[in-house]
Image (cartoon, rainbow, N blue to C red; front, side):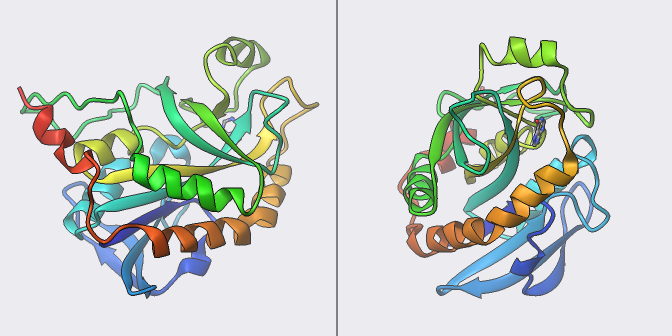
Length: 247
Ligand code: HPA
């Protein structure tokens, strides 16, 4: 199985050979390498010039992985916690999400395809991520609320959002939806890098970066173990989702 990894800044350690992938939405810079006998393609989500979350070409990233033959994607994201009990530095593996971005989240403009989002993340990839993350730290599960950014949230927004979700971030959607439309297994490992607005004195990007750098090697280890354990042949339902959504 060919595996795609989409990560934020600072994961350039994954490197390998720099390649340019074709997609219907533009070229994508990626890194190709082999790990544990598996072909891996790493895409730095924000591209070479580090585009902010609202300007990332999510369509190009997913379409490029699809065209390159990836059957599973491990996504790495950072999030703010909306629960005191979900502490900074711990891991969060979302099992659901709320998309408040308003970003375009489909490949299908001509054909009507309604992908089922009852179980948005691949259960097989999620289970392995949870098990491996548990060996490296505290792991939480729950709902990721996606905001448009690039600004951070207001205290009032967080007070509202925390009634419906556990963490807040800017990068999960439309990535997860597009992966589903592409029939690719997808799960995310998030690092809780801060408490959301109003829950800590102020939000400091330097602090977020510091937490991220502190946990980076653990995340890389978790992803590495996940690469080892992913099944060669897919037995989950993810590949059938687009066909089942056709009218
Ligand atoms: N809000 C939105 N996105 C984020 C945050 C946050 O608090 N932390 C990391 N990404």
